[in-house]
Amino acid sequence: MAGLYTSVISSVFFPLHERLKKHDTVAVRQKMEISQWWDRARLEELRLLKLRRFLADVEAHVPYYRKLFSETGFQSGEISRVADLARLPLLDKSTIRANIDATKSEKAEGLARFNTGGSSGEPLVFYIGKERVSHDVAAKWRATRWWDVDFGDPEMVVWGSPIELNAQDRIRGLRDRVLRTKLLPAFEMSEQKLDRFLGEIRHTRPKMLFGYPSALSLIARHAEARGLQMDDVGIKVAFVTSERLYDDQRQQIGKVFGCPVANGYGGRDAGFVAHECPHGGMHITAEDIIVETVDQQGKTLPYGAAGEIVVTHLATRDFPFIRYRTGDIGVLDSRPCTCGRGLPLLKEIQGRSTDFLVAQDGTVMHGLALIYVLRDLPEVSSFKIVQESLNLTRVLVVTEVGLNKELTSRIESV
Image (cartoon, rainbow, N blue to C red; front, side, top):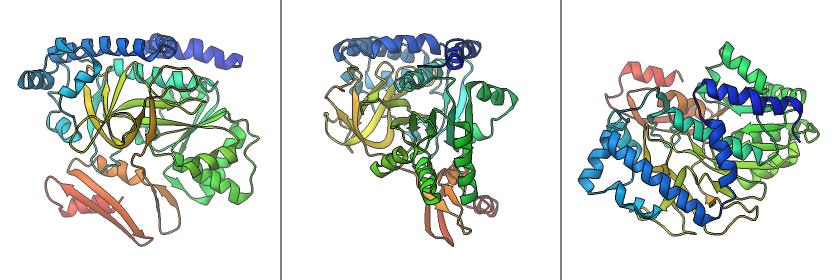
């Protein structure tokens, strides 16, 4: 049961915070709390209705899709089932990059610029509107509450995105203090910093952890190596995302911190696609997101077949993601979850994972430490990082302008 402070934060402060940002997060989450218990037939009716409205809006206001629909003979008004989406071509990063301005809605306002982590070696710049932010936060909020924790409960976040690490201004710092969220940088994890992380976790006594599975499992392994008991801190759940969660990582995190591990799948580009419930089901955010799996030729695959995960996000009318190729491999499940929710399931996620790099002095660095730098170099269109030894890390890049001395120096300085 939530304490008084948590109740005030989740029912008063956070809703006010979202309203001031002109987000509809609270209303969206409240609807999601109800619709998650609908059966699949009713959810499918909702998705079809939202899909029709979404495609009609995109056709009317997004130049890229207006042209695409015209060229392919696709008419949004003729959609009779969700599966009709397969009549549209797949969307990939290179297509978005080539049509970045034409992909923006003509009526979009206040778009925020984002970019992907680039773990595939192909970073992407894109834009997000307030509607999508509201829906994504609402989806995450709903999934958080599945585990009997909420905004306002103490949280330790082990993360590494520059968006978070470089945005700790006074206002954000104040918000994090009110929400009782503590951010620990996941990029450089020397033994000294791992000791400090464990000390802060014990001092803060968070109700939940959040971070990369590789980072949380590294912290757990360090606690074991130090002989430190961490299962008495009071952590109720460890949320992990952004990488593939391996069975040994789940077991180690759960054993050391004495809590269940809740997996999440998605990204800044695709959205919060799926979250794990306490019964082990990876529930797709079906009210907003349509997930397909396709083969190498782009043909839609049936339930149970492994294929590339393709996402259509129905709250992205300002900058649409329609049949977007994630580059991850997964399997859809036709069976319902024992929790009783009607939300469809991802049976398996065989997606890419980002490993650690080890510096010459032995400091463990998350692979994203390099990825985040390379993805922001406008001259670099794709890249690959391979560490062969402590003394040799190869950075392979494809550039638009050639590899001059200045660019080479900037990459080497990373």
